[in-house]
Image (cartoon, rainbow, N blue to C red; front, side):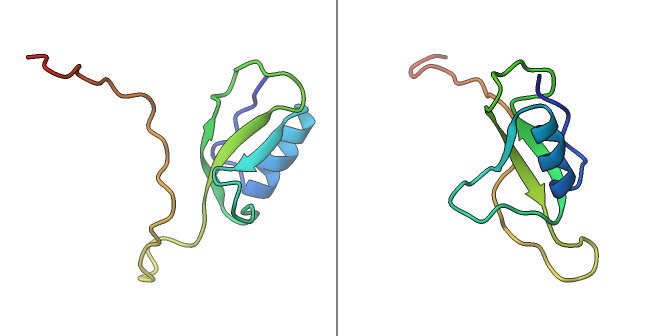
Length: 90
């Protein structure tokens, strides 16, 4: 079962996932995984049943906020499915 990783330090989230026989992977596998920062989002959600060895995608928030350093664009955190109105619907 997928554990809750949101709010954990990234390095801790990786360990918690491994303890559950899962692999926490960065939301963009083409980049080096973040080990510093806090998990801001995850997919699938906690409580989801996966087969051992499956991946849990994590979004890690890095850097400090409120220090006047500006923000990094980074990847958008998923907000879930959205409804789409069919073409031609009124």
